[in-house]
Each structure stands twice: as structure tokens, then as C-alpha cells.
Image (tube, rainbow, N blue to C red):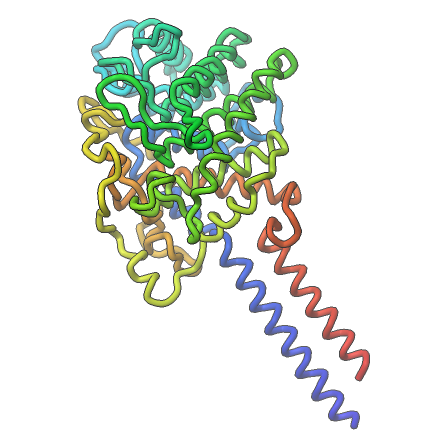
Length: 483
């Protein structure tokens, strides 16, 4: 009888070990390994050449590598002056490369940080926060570059040279007044950060006003609060481009975070409330259109458009950030659904098609003929610039399970073409940045105990599966005690 009990106990303990191992694997499958995240960043460094890609890369690196310097974290602004931590080295290097290239330009006087010959006036300011941070932490004293002057020229160019609407909305384009939802990620966060560092509340108010004006032109009340992509000019796009809604929500959150953590938190509490409501409005309009597979279509409410992992990532990141900044938890279950879908392991035949290094274009969605090179976010007259400061990890498969929505070298898929927003692409630097931002936002949310999560639905995968595993082990101990 004793031997029988021992054999039963051993069998139950073995079963318990199998349960723990299996559940631990399930938990790991819902997140990126360090190697996988490094590979995502490496592809981002290789691919980011246009101004908006470089700026978005810098913001993503600050958020993930040095959260204490991010406006989205609960740390006071301005940040510490003096020597920057080593975790900011890549960001400072980005700023240095841009300011060095600018110094060789023949353009004199107020000018953008990149693309001085014209084009998308709203894109270069996305690099502005990195340049301001380089100046703030004393990089100029070490390398002799005029970061302060570069930022001031960019600001003056925006305020004095770029065309505006009659009520003051700064155009995203130089050749004519056009208002793009993309602008809200690029310009208002730069204005707000500049204002906080220079103790200029007028600039912070201007950042808010640009968000307000852009919403006034682009919000579609008939679509539940989603934003149209482009208003005014010759290239209007009244469709509800998912990435555009993500750009707008993420930009307003950066302005919100800058206000909340600055010396103007009390005097601008009403503006902060508006920004919170406007981000929630976008979420309320777009998340009912989340597809059953956890992804958004390229145009959220157009079922004929292709799945887009890029917009799915940035929108999920804004849900986590809104929960942390404003305590709004409404769409956390959907954000978790999207994150788990994007980080899901590849399985069966479906993984082979998603794991190829290229994708087949699907039917064009609205404005598919409008490319970045002619009317899009990019600039046909600019020369793409690389700002990668170090050798990137080789494009080999990183350690960790193969993932359904990443190629073997960790390019996100499927994605909208970053240079032609109406068609599907194969590699998107901005999509890579959105993955980093989603990972960082989820990490910060999980580190605080996943505030607003409802039972298992909103818990972090590791916490949930650990609880399940512990329950299983406790049950086994009870069984053993009864033998």
C-alpha cells in the first residue's frame, strides 16, 4: 500500500511539473523575448530613413529604454539636466546625426530639422524632442553641435514659414494647406516639450490648440468619433485610416503626459481633461471595428481592406497609456486581444504565409494612388538619412518561438506600405516603432499591477498563468495529503 502511495505521489508530482512547464510556455508565448525585441529594434534602425520614421524611432527608444525621460511615465518634467544616462545613447546619436546633416545644408535661416527643400512640413518636428533632449543633457558641450539653434530654427520655421488655416491650424504640407492626422504625433508633442523646457506656457497651450484645431477638422461624428485622414487641399481622404487614428491618439497622449508631469499641470487641467476625452473618443469610435482576429483593417470600418498589424500596435499602445495617464480602462480587453494576437506563436499552415518576407498587395483602399513620394507623409525631394549609430544584430532568427505576425528576422506583418497608405507593404519602420511602443506601454501597465484589468481577462499573461499553475499545484498537494 505504501509503495502504491509513493507511485501515485510521484505520478501526481510529475503531472504537476508538466502543468507548470506547459503554463509557463503559454505565458512566454504572449510576450517578446529580449532577443526578439532587440531584433525588432535592429530592423527599425535599419529601416528608419525618412524624417517621421527617425522621429518615431527616437520616441519609441526613449519610451522603452529610458522611461524616466519619457513624458508618458510618472516622472516630473523637465527631466534631469547634465550627463544623459547611457540608455539614451542611441537617442542622442539620432539627434547628432540629424543636426550634423543639417549643418551641411545650404539653406540659411529658419528651417526644418530635415527636408529643408520643402514637402511634408509636419514630419521633421517629430525629431524635435530628441534634439531638445540632446541639448538639455549637454550633448552640445561634448560634440560642439548647436542643438538649441537647430530646435529654435525648427520652431520658427513651423510658426513663421509653414502655411496655416485662417483659424491657426498649421499645415502638414508646405505646397498647400493640408491637415493630416499624422501631424498630431509629429508637431504638438514637440511644441509642448519645447514649452516645458523653456518655461513657455504659450507653447504648451499652442500644442493643445493644434490638437483641438485638427480634431475640429478631422473628427467624424457620424463614425463614432474616428478621425478622417486628410482634410483640405487637393488630396483629401475622408476615410478612417487606422494608422492615422493611432497617430492622432498617440500624439495627444504625449501632449497630455507633458502637461500632467510639468509645472503647468494645475493651470492646464482643463486642457488635460479635453485631451483625455479626445483620445477616448477615438478609442470609442474605432474599437467596435476591431476584427475577430484581433487586428484592424487598414481603414477601420472598411471590411474590404487588408489586415494591418502596424495600426493595431500603435492603437493598443494608446489604450495602455490612457489607462496609466488618466485611469480610463474601457478598451483594455481589446488592447490585450490585439497584443496577444500580434505576439502569438506561429502554428500550422497559417504561419508559413505570414512568415514570408514579403506580402501580396490586396485591393487598394481609398487614396491608394496618393503616395508618400508625391502627396504622402514623406518628401520626394529629400534624401533619406540613416541614423543608426551602431552595427545592428544580423538579420537572423532571434531566440524564441516563431511568431505568426513577424518574419523570421522580426519584421512586423502584415503592414500598410509606409510610403503609400492605401496599399499593403512588406516592411514598415514605423510599424517596428509601434511594436516597441506597445511593448513598453504594456510593460509599464503590467508593472503597476495591470490597473483596470477585470479578472483573468486583463491580467498580465505571466500573472494569470502563474495563478493557474499555483492553483494546480495546491490541488495536487491536497490530493497527496489525502493519500
